[in-house]
Image (cartoon, rainbow, N blue to C red; front, side, top):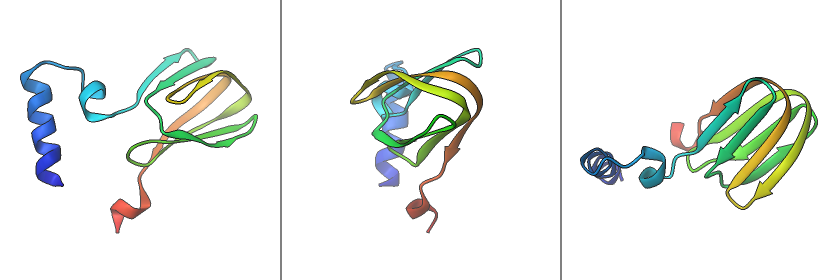
Length: 97
């Protein structure tokens, strides 16, 4: 599995592709503290007006803040509006074991 990841890294560098395209990484666009646009997620796990948790290929993305409203949600994209205070990557617990 590690060899496959190394090969993906090498190919990405050689053909000058953005890493998120070839390696299945999330693309996150933050506009101030009021909008966050996440592409290439694997699903919405938790939603409240103060917390959003998304499943990623490796781990989860946790967004904390206030007055959250989902403006757009598609199978791999999400546009969130509100007061964004924290954006955290949570490591996959299985990977650490």
